Structures are given as structure tokens and as C-alpha cells.
Image (cartoon, rainbow, N blue to C red; front, side, top):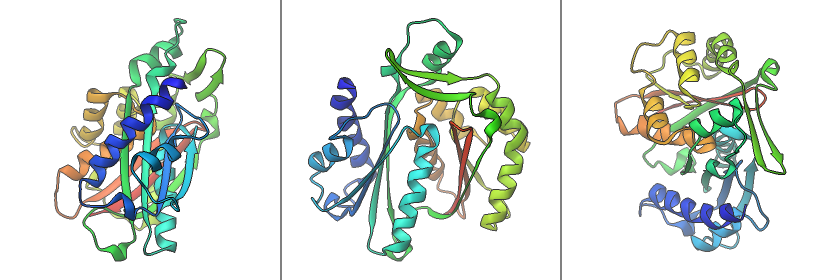
Length: 275
């Protein structure tokens, strides 16, 4: 936690500056949402970022902690609600995960899988009301489901030797079994007829393969997810925004995006968007 307290703010500032990219002023940020499941303290990351980024002292702050890999979508859902309630809101979301701090020396399958899969990273996104009329992706809807059959197959627990990960080999089977039906229900809620780009959390190669099989996707349709997994590993909550950035870099016309991430519960969080 001491290492997280020192390094997470620096990494987060880099992500925020990349996000704002001299187009938006930190002084105009009205809401700050910090997301992490790999480090916690009080005062925490939110107050550190307020100081480092010279945000207004009146900025609304909240933190989403310990929700795992789907937490960025939970933050987007919260930010979307804020923007719908306040047309002048500028909501800055920062997801910062230092997963490698929780390396475990005992040679169990869970510990080895975690060490192979997870990496460190930070991602940031700025949300505004549609009335702001800035370029960017427009969020249409959110949908989530919990599959209690997988409640113990994906877990993240505190212990005297650090944070302990449980990641059962059964998780890809659960996702393959249920994902197509969840997508169908999410698209029905959004009144979405087709998907041009898939923005899927790169939880691991087997999980991406399970999704590809469940949805009968062709080769290349999950390429952005595979690229993030290959280049950075699973970055927990930060991952889905890395994938979204790659999707948006394609800059194709009339993008219809379906996104999904998975975490403890077993929770499936989804969103639909267009550009």
C-alpha cells in the first residue's frame, strides 16, 4: 500500500494529461471518480489527484473500490447519470491498478495465473452532457447481470500476505454458456440492431475465445481486446478503457459499439455506444 500510495498518483496524472490532451482544462472538471481494487488509503488517490492536477477545491469526489475488472463500466454508469442530471458537468474518471504489487510466492494455480495475466496501468476518460457537443463517443445505455453460479470462481480477498486472487478455470465456460443471451438482452434494452465494434475486457485469452465462440464472431472482431492483452496484460478496471481507445482510433463512420467487462459475482457489465 505504501508503494501504491507513492506511484499510483504519478501514473494517474499521466493518464489524465493524455486524456485531456490540452483540449480541456482541469479547472473545468466538476466531478472526479477514482477507481481501483489494488490500493486504498485515506486520504486517498482522489485527494492526491486534486492537488497534483490543481482541481478546484469544490470538485465532487467519489471512489469506486474493490469491484474488480468491471469497475470502469460502473464508473461510466455513475458519470453518465451525473451528466444527465447536470448539463454543465465535466466528470473525470480515473482507473489506476497496480496489480503486480500483489505477487504471491506460493506456487498455486491461482497465483501463477494471476502473475501471468495481470499488469499495471492507468486510464482516464472525460464525460460531458450531450449538450456540450464535443467530439467523442456517445453512450446509449448500460445493462448488467450477475451469474451466482460463478460467485466463488472469481474472487479478490485481503489477507495478511497481500491481496489473494481466485480465478477458476471454469470462468470461460460460464461466460461462453451465458454471454450470447446477455448480449441479446442488453441490445434489446438499447434498441440496438447491429454491432460494428466489440469492446470486450481482455480478461484472458480463454475468456476472449469463449466470447468469440458464444457470439460466433469471425477472426479479427475482438482484435482490439487481443492487442491490449498482448501489449499490457489484464489491467483490471483500466483495461476496458484501453480497448475503447483502440476502437475509437479506427475512426470508422457510424461506429456501433458494444462493450462488456467481467468481475467478481460473477458480474457482467455492458454498455452500448455510438460515434
